[in-house]
Image (cartoon, rainbow, N blue to C red; front, top):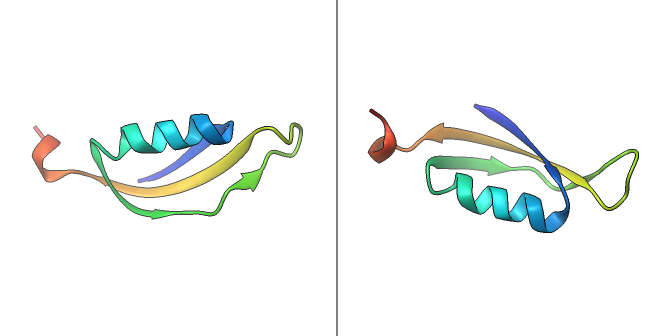
Length: 55
């Protein structure tokens, strides 16, 4: 899956940490600044479900 996270640097890091508990994060892009508000950023993830969380 390809996932976009959008928020403050702290929010995107917290979301990445939470997602890593249930997804295998294959790659993480560099942070891209938001076009409208410089306090926000976007990062893109490539991820797959973890084997131990599939049902």
